[in-house]
Length: 390
Picture (cartoon, rainbow, N blue to C red):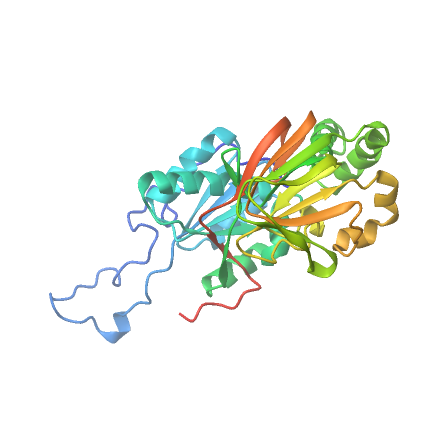
């Protein structure tokens, strides 16, 4: 699952292109140093330079699992014509976003997991709206823990030459595609949800904090903590915990129930009608198919670009363990215990209040939320997509 949001910003490296000692704006100069050209004349062909490189900003969460001094040094060396921001405090996200929008970066890459991506995209969109500026293209470097988005866009592993390879592919015009996210509680995120997923995240945060104070601190922010949290806390608690009562109302355009292999079930559900009412172990929304570690939790999330995937499940822990592999692949189907819809906007009420997560980060307990698909899509760097014609 995603790492915590960006925390503690550092200014771009002095002297680096686009940094505080550089007045070129992060772009190549228009002529060779020392060369002069008479007004109206053309420079010699030998002095003609390539067009300016699009400015690239990288915002790295300094608390993420795979972010260390070597990674920061590597990024600093390979970011030709770009700026590097290393952050460690959530409060600085708005300041970083203000700089990114003011400098009009063409591409903003985040490194630190889905939580880092969610926070920075939210702040950049908010600031761009305030300034009346166009949005940059967004991308993800695989430096967090779960990295759900990395499975969607084909980001490389952070180890070895993965970072350099991704940025090189970006410079060679990696493709991009429009993606609509979810707006919920003032955040813009790829997914959110009540119930089991949020409980596991909260348990993971607790176990990670405890392991970070032991000899296992180096591996605390990773799969080990998830496994320990699930086995020792989440699954046992669900054997005893009563499922909360959940009511979901369609608050947008017509919603549609999805059946086996993406088939349509029943008539469209109109605005104001109840989509579901009953017990629920999980009630979650997503516009991408994956959770962290490649868990294909929303196999129908990309069926329609103007809808979110809503999944409600009452599956018990024993059945979940028995069918773990097909559930993980997104192949498991049982309409009695896993229900899917495509929705534009919904209101979800749960009783009693239940843990809630946004973009993989725990947000505490909630009894009601409203969520809708974002009105404006973002352009997302996608290494699976073909490059643009230009």
